[in-house]
Structure formats: C-alpha cells, structure tokens
Length: 337
Image (cartoon, rainbow, N blue to C red):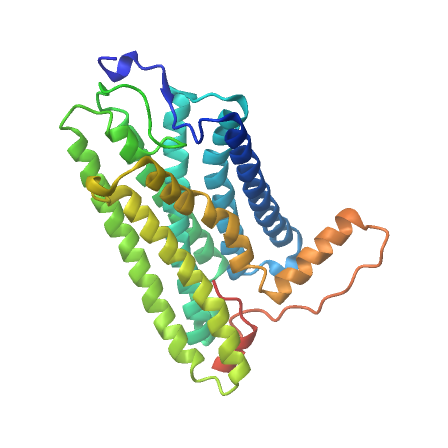
C-alpha cells in the first residue's frame, strides 16, 4: 500500500494463534467489561437517582464513571468481537474513531481527576469556603473544562495522526488502534509533529499529576492533625488507592508512548496496553467508591428496588451537606478520591 488513501482497513494484533486461546481471551475480556459496566453503571444510577448524592463530590464521580465507560467501551468490544469471530480487521473510520474516543476519554479523565483532587483539598483544608469555591456553577464549569480539554486534545492528535501518509502496510501491533503503533506505519518526517503534540500532552498530564500530589500533600497535613487514630487510618486508606491508580495510569501510559525501541516487543506492548487502557476503568468504581458508606447504602437501595422491590427498603440517614464543617476531624466522614 503506497499511501493512506489506499488503506480501507487496518489489521489489529491477534491476541492468540490458537482458537482455544482466542476464546479464553474473549471470556476474560467479557468478564472485565461486564464488571466495568456493572460498577460504573451502579455509580451513575445511584448518583443520578438519589438526591442525597447531589453534591460536588458525587457529581465529579458521576462524570468519572461516564468517562470510564466510554474508555473501556472504545477498546474492548472490538477486541472481543475479533477474538470471537477469529478476525483482525477494523475499518479505517473505525480505527480513527477508536483513536479519537480513547484519547478523549483518557485526557478528560485525568483533567477531571485533577479537579477531584482540588475538590477534596477545598473540602478538607478550606471547609468554610467550600460552598463559595465549589458552587453548582463552578462545578459545572470545571467538569465542562475537563471534557472540553479532552475533546480538543484528542481532536488535535487524531487529525494530525491520520493526516500522515501511511506507506508501511496496515498491520497495527496492538489489540486496538493506538497512536504510537499507527505512527510506525508512516514513512514521512511529518510524524515529528505528532511527537511534538505528544510531548505537550505529557507535560499537561504531568502538570495535572503534580497538582494532584500537591493537593494531597495539603490533605495529608490536615489529616495528620486529626486526633482520632481511626480517623487518620480511614483517611489514608482511602487516599492512597487513588494515588496508586493515578500513578499506574501515568507510568504505563508514558511507558507505552515513550519506551525505547530496543525494549519493545509485541507481548510487552500488549501487557502495558491492557494495564493502562482496560484495568483502570474496571477497578476505579471499586477503589474510588465501594469504600464509601453513603454510596454503598444508596447502591444497596438501588439494587433492592430493582431486584427486590417487594421488600421493605432500609432508610439511610440524611447526608450532611459538604462545606459546612470547620474542623479537620470531619475528614473521617469524607470520601477521598
């Protein structure tokens, strides 16, 4: 194939050569996908349907769950279909759509995680100003900025990547369309433009990560002043998983995009891609949400109403509005992302 105009489809990496392993990968991905759908779907339903969760913290969590669903739904269904039907093909437009939507969800998610860290910082370190700094209009603006920033970032990368001439075939060494793998098919020096865009994006992601770390440094300083040992332990146990997931996504994503060619291999690229594209959306609901007692209570109510509507439902106490507390000890009741 001499150039990109003659390419009508791409060939994705086959996860396995034998039929048995292909079916195994299908069932494994199906289980992960259903877990992600269930976890994120329960969060979205609980936050949307229960007025007690109509607070900034849960508003941002709902947006995060939507992005997680979008991210994992961009990559896994096509990979599962290819494994089930023993094919590798994906259309040119389908490949471009995968690149756009995955980059969009990933970018917007980390912008949103930065906003969520700021939300926790204000709630714990500046509780008297919480209602002023994080009113409903401010929350909508910050969420819109995260989504808009992700859209613009993804649009620039997708347009630039698929404007390059592709003259090295149409085989993508990954189970979904990924920018670094598509750049390998280019024979033009114009790919340096995409490298420049990737560097800018990494700088933005690192800036968000630094902002998250600084926010949690201030949070930890406030938490350490809590007199209750149980309260401190609870705060640390809910903060650290969030930072661990952020670190996992950043480290694996940067490794996937900037690893030296000398250590590149198909198996390593596949493992890294699964770690940064599949694992976080599946585990985020359980790490971020299932430790929260208020949210778990509402989720149990939603499940009871759905499957056991004839049973008497438990009544949960009214949540205390956020932003009305003035003592750091109230960190014990907060949900940390």
